[in-house]
Picture 1 (cartoon, helix red, strand yellow):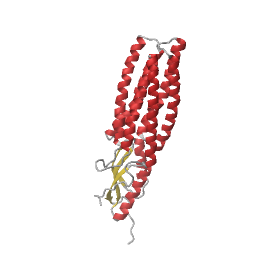
Picture 2 (cartoon, rainbow, N blue to C red):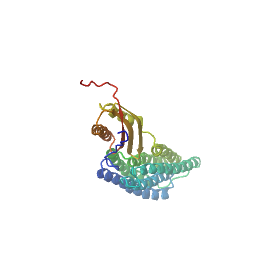
Picture 3 (cartoon, one colour):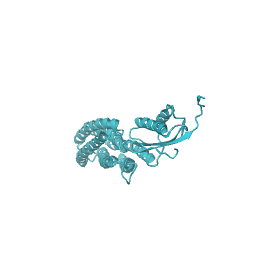
Picture 4 (cartoon, rainbow, N blue to C red):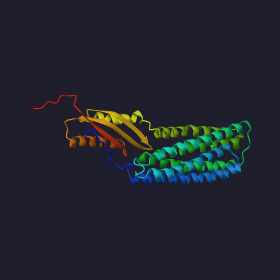
Length: 313
């Protein structure tokens, strides 16, 4: 009895199957399209204006595109079902992509911060501010539409990839506004220092926001336990089961968005194998309702119930 390991019946790849896959692919494709469009527009404007704020915004868009392309590949890979070589599925690719993003973004933003500091002390005039302002306005509108769609998809799929992508583009809305203000200050007030200052602020903000993605990916790859708030949901399921007399050795982790939960369940020794199996099945099902797509392994341990049973003589 104690040697029995019970495995999840849920599809190993995704909670809502093809609908989730389709939404995630659409969201990443939309991001690639918008980022490509913005890069072309910002590149032309930066070439004409020599604005550092536009350059920082362009670099950010370039990394958004790179990230979205990585994410597109990662989504395709993460959605592949488990195979003989990857019995736990392919969701860890999300964490690898997240870690790579964090490294890319950090390096590029540090370079822009250094450039901005240099330009603050040696200000240079900007040309074609109106062109830059027009592109910033266009960027804000296009990005707002994308973020609205990504928010919807992230809510439906709980995908780390879509969530990470959404974080970049949400920041872009603020950045485009910053660029708009910097160019307006340069054009109407002659404040040439506004441009490097805004570039500095944008780069610092991107650096700060990418920190959480990199950290979460790192923790997942290191098999860190679920946060206490998530584990509290597991405890609630286990506490509320009348046939469960206790549990121990609870281990949890995430790979991408896929939860892994395993523990030893203490159930009455006198039960038949079929009854014990039914209890384990029920607990597992409740956990999978709580964590869709979770991989749950429960090891039953027979124990003598603490409360003495009253048997008929």
